[in-house]
Amino acid sequence: MATLADLPDSVLLEIFSYLPVRDRIRISRVCHGWKRLVDDRWLWRHVDLTLYTMRPKVMWHLLRRYMASRLHSLRMGGYLFSGSQAPQLSPALMRALGQKCPNLKRLCLHVADLSMVPITSLPCTLRTLELHSCEISMAWLLKEQDPTVLPLLECIVLDRVPAFRDEHLQGLTRFRALRSLVLGGTYRVTETGLDAGLQELSYLQRLEVLGCTLSADSTLLAISRHLRDVRKIRLTVRGLSAPGLSVLEGMPALESLCLLGPLITPEMPSPAEILSSCLAMPKLRVLELQGLGWEGQEAERILCRGLPHCMVIVRACPKESMDWWM
Image 1 (tube, rainbow, N blue to C red):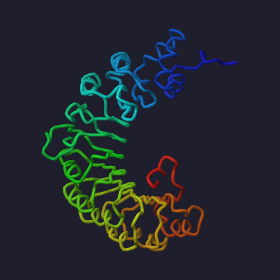
Image 2: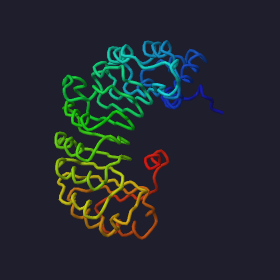
Image 3: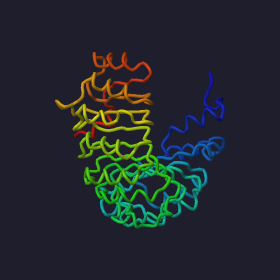
Image 4: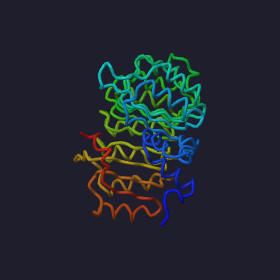
């Protein structure tokens, strides 16, 4: 019977990649062969530390011993709700990430207090920055800040960042490489602020507006007015009507449209009205409807038959998305 020792290194590395960081380090003590595999650069390209309340000393050890130039993406928790004695992310740690991890492209921070961390301390190599339930300084994203910060940033995710407001949205223009923006639960952004912000972010190719206080109609109107090159739109259907959806007709570059429920109102477009608008979107290739309760219903059949050139996806909301509507 074959044992683990009989498996090729490539298979063992694939297995080890599914282990949490703490378990990876533990198995390095099993034998010299596994220690050699745990030291392999491939195993440390993507690291998730959100499972742990990690002391700064341990984090610095991981940075020096395992990650360094190998690291491509990192997920970290900041313990914002863990009490004053919990370890916090520091400017020194952020600067060290930039200095020791020259290949770091994606940084995801969860439940972190970044109010004392200047944005200038973040690694300049980042292409994706995700902030989930984080506190940031009011000066972080203002337009007047240094425009040379994060010169390669292409995607920013702002998920339940309470300080984010209209002036921050307009300040995103400092990131000239930005092409993808996700706003989730950013309740301080107003309809007027979104319209003014998108006017200056006319080069965006992907926009997601999820769980915000903005109506879908006002969001789509701002998109149709300012984002003529947008390729992907994803938003919740709160306040969506057939006339509101029709403003996307004729959008020259739109390839993917995703509408998320379950807040269906009497004004919600019928399947026939959605079909009519989609037929007037010349480049549309993906239509996704989540949480509308239409899966397996006549609505799904109408859309699939009427849009043979599109991939039509009708499904329930995934569990991780349900908190947008709580």
